[in-house]
Image (cartoon, rainbow, N blue to C red; front, side, top):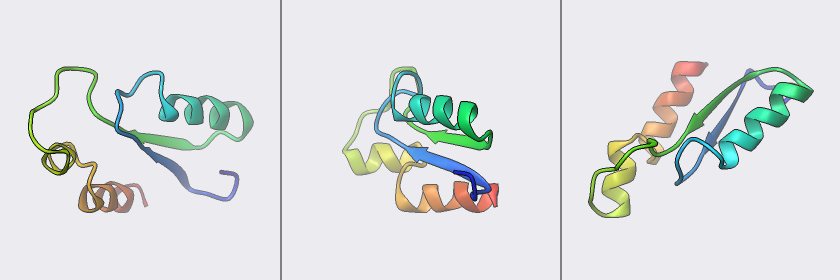
Length: 72
């Protein structure tokens, strides 16, 4: 993370207690950088196929790219 402008994690999980939380903790203590955690909300999610759910929450390729472009 030292040479990065930001760190982005993407997970099929709530935003707390998962990969994003662990990465935020390590990056924050070792080399403070902006960390963006893309995840499902910590609330009931919409129903549908995985593809539909991920698209709705911006966790598909298009949504991830859009978020990263917004960061850069």
